[in-house]
Image 1 (tube, rainbow, N blue to C red):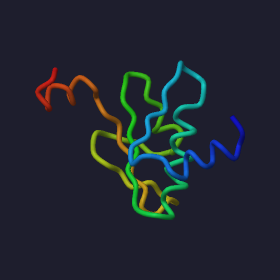
Image 2 (image 1 turned 90 degrees about the vertical axis):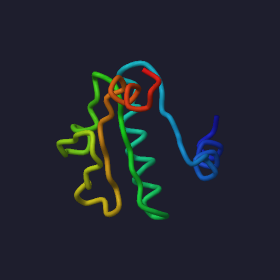
Image 3 (image 1 turned 120 degrees about the vertical axis):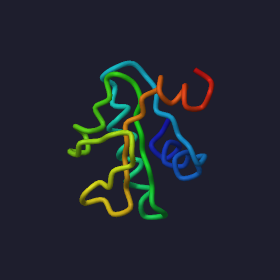
Length: 93
């Protein structure tokens, strides 16, 4: 895949993107970079789920289950999602 094809994919991506892969491959960093790119178009929310969330560290902000404004990135909010609590709240867990 070329840089141009990746850029083209991201420019025409769906409204929701999931970044998956094994630990240490850069999912959080890539998701944050993409989210910052989207900021020029509209306000954005990014979230991370699971026991090993490091979104706090990447963004330099203490996060909770509620959207938190990210300093230096106007319109960007982030949160950590507890997957078990979310499943129970939606009635699927």
